[in-house]
Image 1 (cartoon, helix red, strand yellow):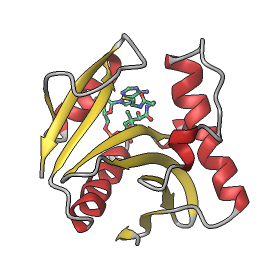
Image 2 (cartoon, protein in one colour; image 1 turned 120 degrees about the vertical axis):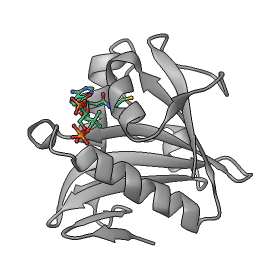
Image 3 (cartoon, protein in one colour; image 1 turned 60 degrees about the horizontal axis):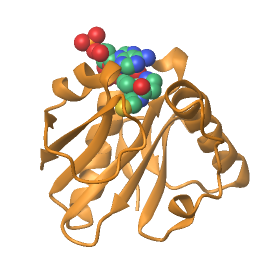
Image 4 (tube, protein in one colour; image 1 turned 45 degrees about the vertical axis):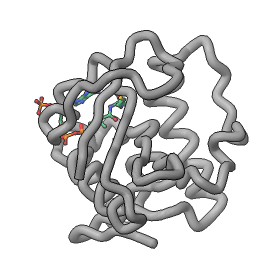
Length: 151
Ligand SMILES: CC(C)(COP(=O)(O)OP(=O)(O)OC[C@H]1O[C@@H](n2cnc3c(N)ncnc32)[C@H](O)[C@@H]1OP(=O)(O)O)[C@@H](O)C(=O)NCCC(=O)NCCS
């Protein structure tokens, strides 16, 4: 399944190169910055679990962002590791990525989204209709807060 908006799309990785780029973006923008004590593992069980969908955000065919959507087994999903590569930030693309991810979740029958937001990125989520909620699971990063949205 893919979600399309203009010359952008959100979909699974189709080649080994795309998968390598997906991991490179996550490692550089999220793990190296927010979780430097962890060694990034592209083969982590959470990455290869069938309920967790690795998705790339493509602009004119080029992978520029990432999200992982974890299906929790009820009507809810967790959005993980949302990132838009440096030169493409602050152009509204992250907000489009989120909208496409929400559509993707809805098409899979889900209407409730949770995510752990780094405190530095709270404005981005608030602006996209997400609000602070109580904790819903284990947090890897003490600098993050739980946010959610019903769609
Ligand atoms: C957060 C992020 C996904 C937003 O994507 P984007 O394409 O820049 O988002 P948009 O252009 O739609 O929205 C811009 C908003 O994002 C926020 N933002 C921009 N760059 C950011 C950065 N490096 N880190 C955190 N937030 C950022 C700003 O608050 C901005 O809000 P403003 O318009 O009120 O100034 C992107 O900046 C990013 O990948 N940052 C690094 C990784 C990260 O922090 N991910 C979120 C972890 S919870």
